[in-house]
Length: 83
Image (tube, rainbow, N blue to C red):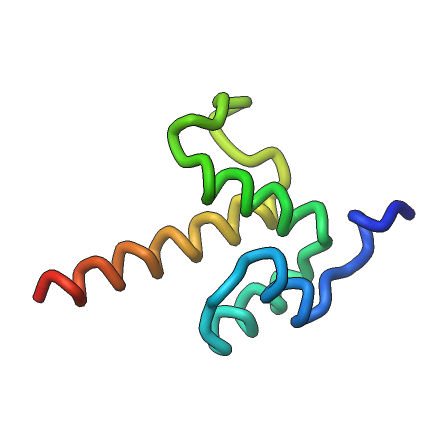
């Protein structure tokens, strides 16, 4: 097992994904991500539309779930700042 295939800890989630709230960290932890899942999710989140599309999105299902979760949170935060 490579280092990136090891299960991610709560500290890993915060280190890789940055400043996210405790509830979101807990929700991501429930997905049982690996470091590789977190790295892939970060790539997609940080690059947005500039990331080459490979079969429509992230290849790892857990990474895709993380991207979806954080994208929804970002949209909700933007809506709150507009109101």
